[in-house]
Length: 375
Ligand code: XIL
Image (cartoon, rainbow, N blue to C red; front, side):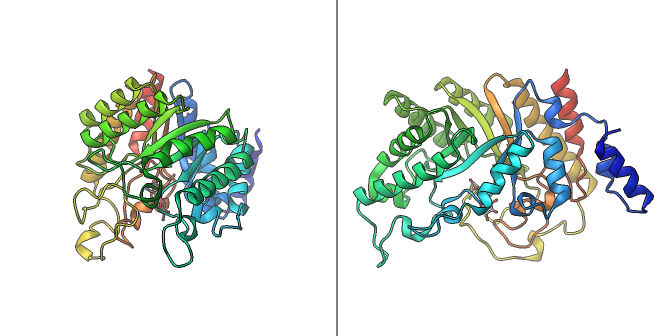
């Protein structure tokens, strides 16, 4: 009898009501077992799970997923709040969490315009710093972070969200100061810090033709310069009507043809109405709460749950079809209650975007994935 089984018996004898997922999970094939020959199956991990406050969440993650990404604690704002101060408390625990469970650990993210501390690109008066100072700061930040987890973090989202929907460069602070040069520089610094680490470019709205073309161009340019880039990360924050499976597939193929692997890095699918079209996954987007924008606070109607499962199934069927190209499929959270989509782009809504529900129960699509992977 395993320790877990023994524990379950003790808890049952003491009258504790166990979540049915724990009982059901015994002896049942998990996502990570079913998908082991297809691609890594990962999730974002939040602070409550890292510090084991959400014990059931942490258990679910350890059973079902073999790759993890920090939802927030490896972003520059968290890791490097002041120029001369790093805070590795939580990120160290995140890496230990993955090592303890034998999971592949992914670093997210080195250079990004969001969750970026003010000091990084501006001086005390709020003016942009010079190109030379920014290069120095980028190099120092990337080197310190990547070296700290050398040999432990398998790959890094080196640059996040640098391309606009039309394929042009996002006019971020990094771009304002250094122009497009900041991207190859970031890849160069990351590679110098850990030559073994895989390096990725990550972005949202990747099914848009303009974005697709811009990312392909960027990958080719990095390769032309002889820089390492292993994969393109497609964030995949979906809704019920966007993107189409067909357009998404075109991007998977286009990235593979540019000579890199593809990773689905932040998968979730909202069922809630959008306050505006084309906001992609820009985290600064924010709209006022209205009751009409939160239609399912008490549960999801069966019809919508079924449509959600069907649509999620068609995406997993697509990922499995391209398992030679796709090296990781990563959810942006384990259960619906963990999802950032409950609060973005409108705070305080109830969404149902992930593979496990608020009671840690798998949705129908999980069985589908397990069956399909084993065919
Ligand atoms: C989100 C987190 O999930 C939230 O907790 C946080 O408040 C904002 O960022 N694209 C990314 C992720 O690359 O890092 C973002 O994560 C979601 C969009």
